Length: 346
Length: 268
Image (tube, rainbow over all chains, first blue to last red; front, side, top):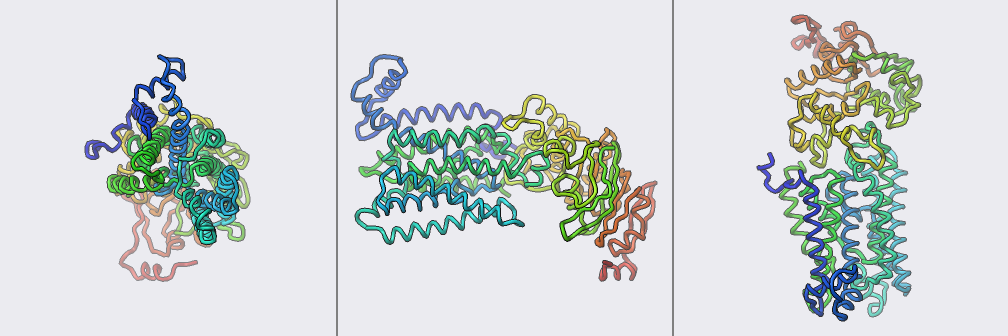
């Protein structure tokens, strides 16, 4: 059976090997990202800077240390954090909604965050208020979707949740469009567009200090519940008959994934594709079992976004929006996966 | 007594399906539940599993009132095998069996060695250990049914409830699954299963329950419940109940006018 689909599931027997390989690749990519930029640094200097930070090796060149710590490290840390976080949220949602076409913003978190941020920009608020509005908007959108779905009895709860999320998301999309139409085209529209396309360029250490703990708070329950998450892929009655309090577990996952996504969107804007694509890639390598899938998906998500972001800031003389690059890379990759795995999505 | 119902009424508020149902099933006994589509088999099963509240009466599981048990306590006593389904993701057969351990694994836990041993023992007992690493989505319908049965056995339950375990199976696998149920009962389990084929009540069941659309029911030994008169009344089809090699079989009177008349006008 396995030979017939060479490559598919190739690493199932050893998820640890997959994680180690992905971890090493991630470390190499992150070091490469630290070296690349407007001023290219020799990789040896980067390693010396990193080594001296933990008290290993000789003193690093002053200028290299400054570039690494002041300019590149916050942005690369943000790429790693956001990439891992969005991949984790996407993995959780794809399992929970029994649908491999679901992404972290299926319940409207991105639309809510975008509406919040765009309104804050429209009313000329400072960066912190914009971030807070994005976070609050994302959370409020999902809370509304959840409340509507909970009130809609007589429907499959998972389906009702997705439907209300999609509908509320589209309403908020209209709010965003309205604000764009009303915004001052010189002073407000550029930051709005920039925000909607997503960017890691402006991430500061302070942003990381705010968003990082929120993301960790959301990741922790997913990591702790990693095995139990598998049972959400079953029918509700089936999972209940196995002893799982489905409604409570689903609510916990929605809260965790929303926290993760809203915190990410607040600092990076809307970066699509990571949460949709990466879980597929990870599933191809280690299969759908969630406790094997989640760590690998996080590593791959971090590696993917740090690569994309490095391309965004080095490929051309202007800064590319990462959402554009993830879409350019994501579409063919996703189509490849779709064709490759069609047999198992009967 | 493992599974007991006293004066049970089940259904939905304002739409009661049946009342006054008394069931008693000990270890080693098998109950075959029959009834027309929409006759309430699914609702009865959901009630037995504690997924849906009983309207009246009491259910007991291993002597404890079902209503007093928490969800995971029910799962430690009662294994449920749903109808064959095609899940979204290709979990391995072993992963599926391991899910049966959920009620015995802590909230933040993962399967330990004894859980793996229980899952593998269940696969072994059902003769599908060689499929452990295969994706559940790629094995045959009969093998999937056995994998779900293995999941239920991994719960280490006192009783099993199976929703149409032979539906969607080829003839050979139907017989194999029924024999398997009989053997599991012989290993001190109580078994409840539903089916659309009255013959199956004669394949190892100790009790039969025949539900009707009107809320009446027949309960007792299969010989007493599965009679030509009862089947005619419930399904509107004339049937001979004959014996072949000591096993009873139900033969529809396919050629007679009486049989056709029954099809066109089912009794309510």
